[in-house]
Length: 512
Image (cartoon, rainbow, N blue to C red; front, side, top):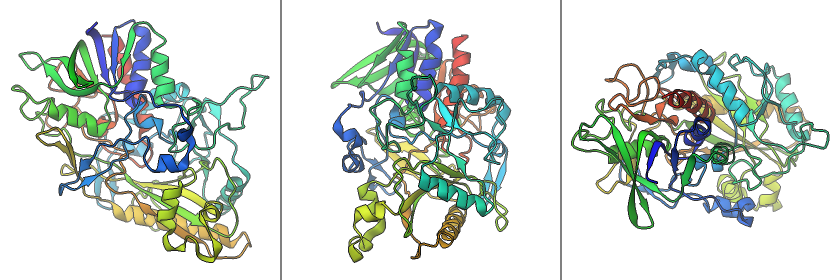
């Protein structure tokens, strides 16, 4: 069959969730995925194999100067969520309004937090989020508690959390999408059966990604079809240019075309923009849905960085992804503008650790195992601002090029300093001696796991690509349901907002 009611292109946080939402509608749904199922194999939990990019795309992108780089991009059923850390945080209420930053204003959204709140609730239930309400003072209001209690901290992380709290801050459990087994009494088992979770393709299915939750959920219904290894080449329109009628894909060296009444693009913000640009035709010479000229523009990838805090006290934690420090999200006593969020990340892989520690590796008998056993790993996120010149383009052969200049770096610098001061104080009060040292780096243009903003939504077709329901202004039946629709990025992981919005859009599409 090549004719469907709805085609969804992509299986990541947006596409996988949308498919799960639409599956019970009875509509004939086709899901197109350019990748395959990620294989279950020993290397899933091999730090060196993962660090060397075994599961990352071999596709090379180009920067503004034409230099090739390897993006942190994964093409599997489940998209980038197959490798994400499962941290599912809501945008803060302030993120939906205009906000002044060091380098400019983050624009208001056409909808407010209250419009997304019930969909956040549903997304947290769907993805089995574990957390604790009322600890994080920046967390927006919610009608209910988290579906499951927060994972208990390991002893070392509990010590650190308590020490941070004594400084007057509010360390909180990171809300995590993880599906734990039930014990014999039906209670939630608090013992993890995985350790390598953040940045690893968990083969147990415990990590709540959009493959094991969204796609597997959707495929329980006979009206849903998944076709793998089909890269979308272009979206075709009718003669009027007002309706998208089909999708042409590449499969095993051949082209195939599939038709549908409604087409939803969920390829991830960068690839969704690239697909629309590649779909230019006589009626849409600048690219599909691009009468505003904004398709691909306002690319945001966050100011993300890794900070490795080394101290004399060992850190034997196996599952370290525990602590969120939210206190600087809206600013600080010495900063009138927002700084961002600090989170633990999983233990650093060998290559990352070696690159970060550099020449100190091997000195005084301190090998990689020593550093790994004494480091607490942090991931810090400061907002970057939407800039029209930060954009996705494609060349004549359809290859992706990113024109991206970092901004709002003062917020990132100050946030890093805040973390260092916090951890200095932790070490000073532990009485174990030694000097706390800090390693790490800021992610560059290849760090696209938080990509968003390339097809912003809004009420005005002149200043946005999509309407408030994420339908393209220029077409009657083309939608975009991933992080492309963000007008601004906030400073938390974008996955939960993509999932919540996909549920919102899915409700509308199911009623058509």
